[in-house]
Amino acid sequence: MAGIKALVGLSFSGAIGLTFLLLGCALEQYGVYWPLFVLIFYVLSPIPTFISRRLSDDDSSSNACRELAYFLTTGIVVSSFGLPIVLARNSTIQWGACGLVMTGNAVIFLTILGFFIIFGGGDEFSWEQW
Image: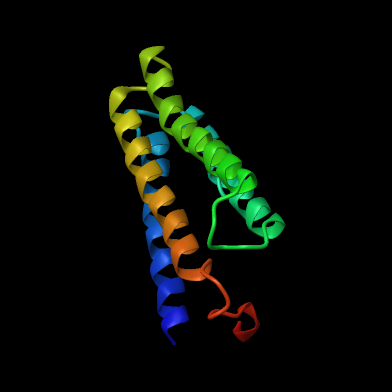
């Protein structure tokens, strides 16, 4: 039952993050949909970690594959926070939209981190119960 509560909480926080992102695009005073390109970063960010967990055998020690995955994930996350700032500096979007997109980024990436913390740890959780 704890897995379902965690899944519902993660779904709710993901919906809140996407709401901030869409508000930064769709409000009448902003009206520009360029910030939606951060959705690509949301999809790309967990991929290096998934690959490194599949390839590495041990969870206790650090290895080059896992460190490379952390490095790539960090680059993707920093890029998703940098894109709205670059768009706002170019006057492509307004600074209010940049703030909403950055808030949405923080909520979504904390949701992704929460997913890895809750569902990514070891053998005590089985996907077969779903």
